[in-house]
Image (cartoon, rainbow, N blue to C red; front, side, top):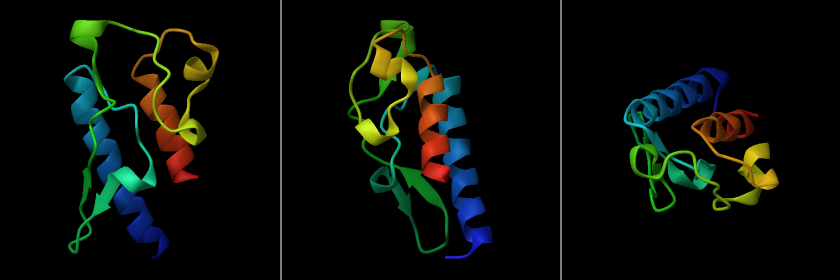
Amino acid sequence: MGEEAIRFIIGCVILGLEELHERQIVYNDLKPENVLVFEDGYVKLSDFGLSRDLKQTNQERMRVGTRMYFAPEIVMGTECTKKVDIWALGVLTY
């Protein structure tokens, strides 16, 4: 897979996270296994079992997800916000 294709995939993931964050949803389980790439190159996020609706739960302490992608807030047990998805995006991109 070339660099251009990877940029496109990451761009699609960013758009998906933006949509979720606009709806006040934390995805909280971003990892390669949950990024489905279709034949046309477009991406869909899957497995919303660990997602949290911030409208209902506010900024809660979450200790769920895949450890490799845990943001520092999750490790330290402090309040988690949409920023945990941004951290996981950086790990995924790297």
